[in-house]
Length: 385
Image (cartoon, rainbow, N blue to C red; front, top):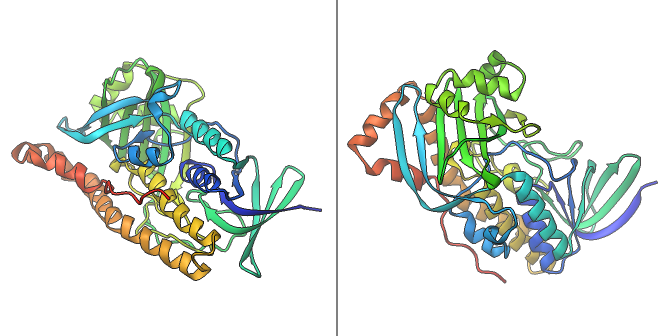
């Protein structure tokens, strides 16, 4: 028989967005459960690049990454390498952070626990029901142990794959199928720059993280991945043969064992999906092209917007219908235009004429800065309660 627990809110997914929601809601006095089907900390497929816009969201969470024992790298510029040797360089609008998900997730989880949230890992969600009296019932299994959480609110932060047996609708996404891979490397000196290499069927980003390491992450078409092998390193080595500058860069260092991970399939969003029977944040809300470097910012921003609306709902200031309406409206206003611009940049990047872009940027020097700017979130945040 399942154990029954009554709580205020269940957050499903303990990544950046879910953990950030748990921190904020627990800090506001709500009994918060943060669930994930896997154990933490662990390496995740991610660019591990936190754009300049993340600082105000981290300030909102009272987190200063530079005060941590494993300080992130500071990144001030970006450089793009095309397959035929052209290069585009642009300064970022402010300092960005490079930090591994292994370190960041651990930091966020500890912050959530300190705020009063309960972190439950290795928990498989088997069913989500909307019960009477505006309650949700979240059924989970941990091994043979079954628990049923009766909650006033549920937040979906489970990435691109929703829980089994949930009724969450699938938003319209691109038909193109991609695979994401990543590995840490040692021995590559990037200083304060992030590098992006366009290759056959995708692109590879290299950014400095903590402890003198760099993160090498790629988004590649499924067809290309199948061509080069099954292991992350085989795929990286194969794709590097299509961009000599990337091959030279990877040859400078060595991969760090046990940091290789992959995720598939990845389909980029065409529109944000803020709500099914409950709100969505992070990748459950939208999957943006990784080359924009704003995935972590969107995860944090969506968590701020959702937590504010959810707090109002839990306190009785919003009805269930108003909760859905307000968060959906704010999410669309915040992310719809950004996503459209990002998809246009993605299409330009994969165009067969991409080799001419460095020449165009040399003719119009401000173009590089403009391309960086249009895929950025605004810097105006809602005030703290």
